[in-house]
Length: 288
Ligand code: 5GP
Image (cartoon, rainbow, N blue to C red; front, top):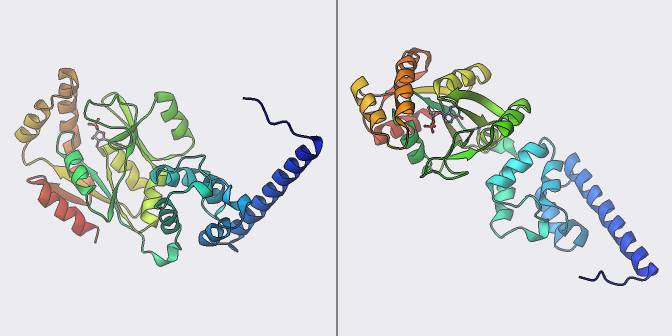
């Protein structure tokens, strides 16, 4: 493609316009930062001000006092807003979702943080999957270095990341807790949990025991729940039936499960997994 033929005057005019737009955006960002402008005000202004309409959503959000890059990125990811999206390109549902996200936190009662743990194979992930259907619960999506199983999806079951990304994010303080389990690393992304709690959602972390014990140390609000199998035999049967794991991994899990059961007394509540419905109703009542 040929670049347009611009006269020196045209070029000077274009440069001046770009500089004026940058200046205007910097002003708006400063007003957002100081609290003088609310998000809704900026969206209103963008309808008649081209420079503001062309501002990147990310720049706008990170300017809000107390938000910053990490939270801005995580909120945009969760609302499916592309990192390069400009205000004028926001979808009809994305705009109200952003307003709700950044509504004054003082008006919203903070959600409860529930940590569901227990031996591998006890049925934690089935409970977590069902709880995702509850409107007032956010089930945290962990990051892991494990290879996805054939029935798992990126961003739904886990964020599947490389070992180097895991280590970099751990060093950056992105994780609320992390643990190694059967040769893979798992972690809870801090910002997603904090965002949801601040919005008044109850949060469930479905994590292993070492992770739950870490949460206990860093959070005074966490309610720790230990899910127990109806019997040891039942747990063995469940682990043996897991076709998605190799024989070696299943044997290792049994060994671990034995050690894990001994941690139950360190938890605030113990629930026996007789039925998913019953476990769900206990969890919902603990959060209310
Ligand atoms: P799986 O590989 O079967 O999905 O999970 C293995 C174990 O890792 C399970 O006990 C599960 O609860 C735990 N797990 C999943 N996500 C996390 C996490 O973010 N942190 C910790 N500590 N454990 C996790």
